[in-house]
Image 1 (cartoon, each protein chain N blue to C red):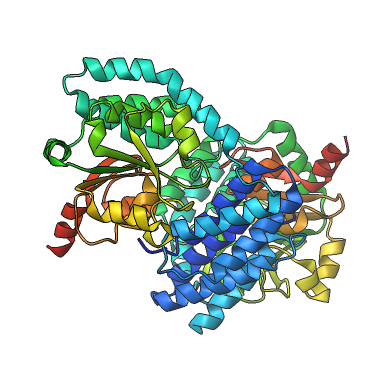
Image 2 (tube, each protein chain N blue to C red; image 1 turned 30 degrees about the vertical axis):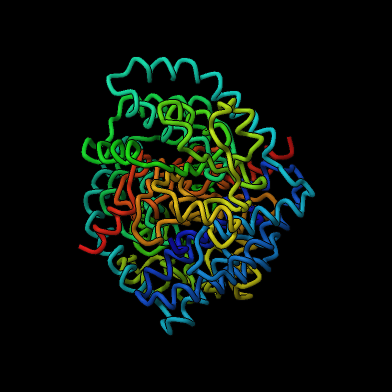
Length: 293
Length: 293
């Protein structure tokens, strides 16, 4: 997905929220904003929004001399999610369709996103989780997702944020672990999940965790390692969590790649033809077919 | 009022709305955004927000080669307001306190503001006008305003937007015209009222209309004519409509200067300690006293 002119004010809003989250030093806030304005003014709009987010986060890290400003926030969101895990797990087990309920919770977990709002609002998170529990997916769409999951011998599961990882576990619990590679970032960026976050989320040892080779949000294949790109090309099925993965992968040729996300941005809402706040399970293969029609 | 870091994304949002309002040419939209990003990156934050708005509007005018892009929109909002005038006038005449009701409508008319939203939403305007009709001002505040109006021998009334001028007439109708100078911009900027708009609003000939000498939003005294600045300094009472007048005049030393506005910006909401959407009648003299306490 290219960068829209609507994204430009949003980069500035994100930069301000992020630098205020990271430091109280107002001189740093102003310097980050000025540098971001300058960087955005020169941006190649054919690039995806996560490429600018990467530049902004690098600016903040450099100016605050803090390589992982979201460390504590990530730990807090993992603790929050771990606290919920047993009850959510029980609800999945008791559901008429456990796989569908687990998928709903995995998508709802995408609400934990410090790129959208740099604060952790547990009441809001709970509201979204309860809404997900009440909101079934379209039957035809989900039944296709179910068959693809059953048929795939290799599944690449692209993680999004720390905390959200615990919600992913609910879905992973129901899948054959030996077929799955769970992909995290190779270094910290915002509150995106790294290997450390997956360990803290108490991921079962039977899930194979790999790194993408990149520390940018989403999946910028030209930033990723050769090994990862090969796995990416060969996987039977890809599950891509969150908006940044949609922004960076929705332009690829058709293949079985499922975007699982909560719609949090008006431009993504428009592109997916789905209302803000919607819970999305969407196959890239079908999106391309619909565009061609 | 200085420019806050929160204003920076908002400048970009305003620039995008404004250039889309003025032209469909997407190359112009992008060029305006890039130039605005660059200009904002170098902005002196001790300046007021209308100074950046001025730079943005000049950029749009230059790039579209259109000296008055809001001409038709201004005419439409004046027609809309003229259509309402007879019924609002009747409600003022029938009110227990006509001066208070006329002031409510004059403040509600501040809803017509293409700097906030570059579209005319008549349903929304009507909702705000009806809300104003139901919402009395604080008695102590309004009673002071009433006495100041009665006592002042010279009143400078700083207009804000076209269309809003018709709402101002409801208040002006109840004041001694010979004591009033009604001040408009010397040239077009956004949908701010100029002499032409006042004529279209059917202002009575007994109201003396003067120009500020400036075509910037609000009242930047260093942009205004020497004649205007003298009148400004000597007036017994000043009525300043709209947020831009608050942004440009709230830093002056204490004097009887009443801000009449609808709160449409979170930073002004914070500065006035008033909720978003609130209808404000506030004397600069008292604000200064409260700050000193």
